[in-house]
Image (tube, rainbow, N blue to C red; front, side, top):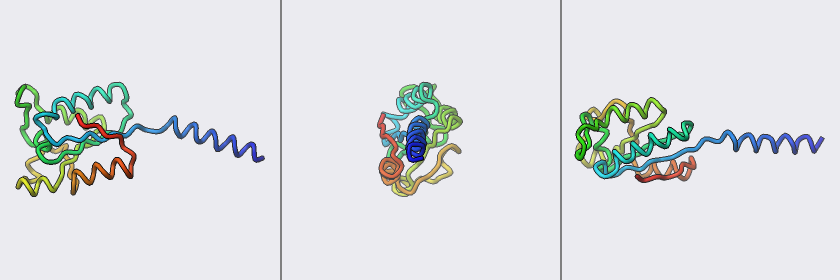
Length: 139
């Protein structure tokens, strides 16, 4: 009987690790330098690992690409809202730091509908890494 329970426990461990989902937080604090590259990285990431749970946390100047009408300065043909919307439809969350909103006198209604808000971007990144075991990527 003990051998049965050992085998059962081992099978749960094997199946549990096989079913484990990758979780990644992408950290963007400078939209001009990171947004286009980061969105491309996320698209490529999901193309090869479509079950990955991805959260993009933005703060400081990183929030700019999530604002209504935002475009890449170097390539104005790149409309961020459509890229973000496409990734959101694939399960990616985009979070904006509310401390940044206060510090820069920004309002939530200035952001695209796909943006969500978090009290502190830096605290959120720490929570995702420590508590929820997200890997960290800064494009």
